[in-house]
Length: 419
Image (tube, rainbow, N blue to C red; front, side, top):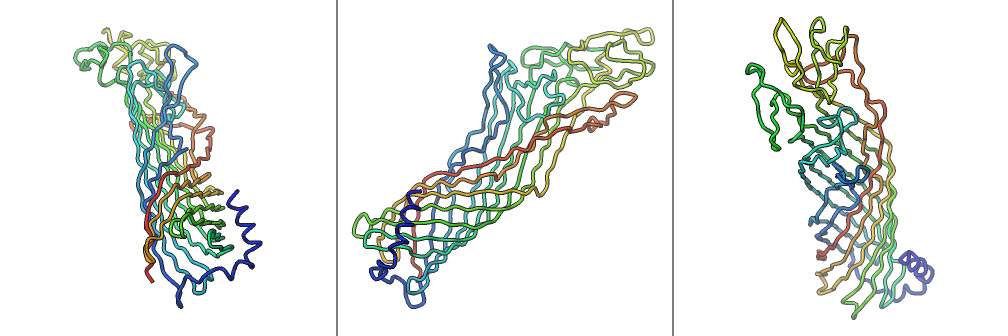
């Protein structure tokens, strides 16, 4: 706001100062190239694959968010200054990619699966895991064209206003896998060699066939927008107009569209009740052939079949309950705010090193789809299934969560006057 106030004041007295402004361009104008390295760090992405529960307080938990470091990226700018100080055209290009990971394990099952859809998450349908692994990838690409014109000039202070056009693409991706390495499920007896016994990390005996499969979820979005930019830049001479302090503020309002996708799959135990209801389990009925197994069912339950003792685990199997939600071309509006503070040294007529701090905020450039209600419809014979997954899964409610991001960090570079 201070910069805008200075610009308005400068514009009101600019006519009286024009005779003090010296011409700095040649007959055909001048060309300059700005080569800058911006060591930027994204903030506000809110990639949270899990929450850690407090085993001593069932109502307490904390989000486990993926951290992000700084990445040096190159910003290119080409400038053409019109003759007689009539203005300057600036064309800029910038790209930033961030890739980060997070993996944690704890045999106490303290990790709540924050990305998993709400149907059958966790080995006991309790949404808990003892290990998770998550990865994220964020990509920003932008191009802008601006026209700068002097508003005020004096021996110590120079103020410019600018208008322009900007195009931004922003991709966000987050994926997580959840594991139950020490599930504490009922021990499964080795029935006549049908199941090979294995031992979990905590010493539990269980069949590999019934060891809980990993569960996973991912979300992604792609924003593309364009819009008009307005702003102001100022330079203040600190020493003989060779060392100057420069600052700027720019605002862009963009209209665009966003594509978003959510996928998730949870492992679920099913029980094949068998023809004629031969399995004596409380979950079986006279009509249902396939049912969802109660998490508390004893895997060593026995029943009599053909005058022989048979274990229920032989009729238990796992399938995947998969969910996918997609939103295409969702209308989106985004604002971009640029602020920079720095110093420039006019070392030579054709060479100017510069450095400073820049912060750019992009609002509503991400969209997370999160299923909040998922249901399973059973047919007359129980759950309809295939080996690839449970069928008749319906997403009853989806939350759309807008996401913003801020890139901030130090920059340094050099300006070459080409002509």
